[in-house]
Image 1: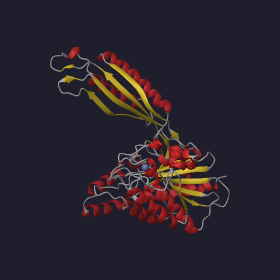
Image 2: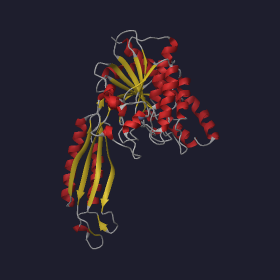
Image 3: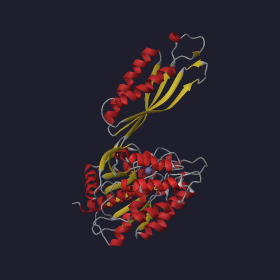
Image 4: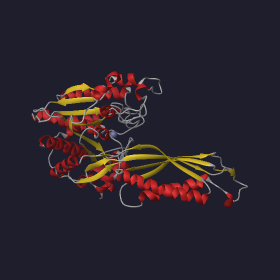
Length: 448
Ligand SMILES: [Zn+2]
């Protein structure tokens, strides 16, 4: 049985106990070979992930630990007061509320930093962020148990408000590291009227000292993050370790198509300037121009509004948003130019006016080649297959990359599902990801 079929069976039969038994029977001999031997403790990693999953468990399904809410505070307390002390770490909370657990090294060297986040979207999965966070603690726990002291000091970090499901903007803790905030962001209130200062204060942060969260280039020897892929590439390819090439840049354009609203019964077809027909052609053009040429770039029209949006009126105006993502800004710019040319053709042929205005542009963050190589080598040494791939989703690593060498490790998401109660990753893959992260940290520590 192919792995994908197995996964489909898993998903299809997850509800019934009989089905569950059957998948184990069918699947047991089909499992991909895991790491040959583990340095870390996969059973403890799993137990800790399952314990954290109970905090903020949503009666509607999945887990809801939205940043800076009660459940997030409880989850962070579990990490800070139970897991990190058990791993014998010196624990502190920075001004942005990120939790940092430190283990000293033998030499006076910059820190090797690694971690992720434990806040979730509403009804999220139990692995998104949590895996990288608890794997980081597991590694330090293992080193403490085995009495291994590295040359560099090691720090695991649990970032603050990665998802942005609260106060609208994510990557809060990692943006504090590079001092990147939107104007007025540190003076905002949420829907309940709670000032951001008090929300961050609730997890032990202090916005009046926010500058103390900054890290200078040279302070961090390398930053590593393990995360679930949140897409289906690794699962489909039956590969357990993704070596992330970088986090894609994202550019958005606001598009207005202006035609002429008119009576839907009395206006003959040749005389129409239908803004929605032109917009539809443009939506198809976005897809065609995105897939023209090689690469893994993506282009989406996910938001569209029709005016006046009435059944018996020919649409006079359509507003839509085009979003393009890729690791290369040149590729994005090339697609943008071709879409503009297509828009001009559509406009001329349909008697409408089409304007494209760039509204936001986030640069790609490439991972550091030598860190990528270390991850790939250590995965291979552990007997695991790897695949180089971009990250289509944003991560704290993209911020830290501005001040430190950066690398990310992905493990498969079953069926590519994420930000959903159905999000899942096989425990073997979670353990393999933790193992590769551990080996990569030790390899970076020995690097001269
Ligand atoms: Zn995440």
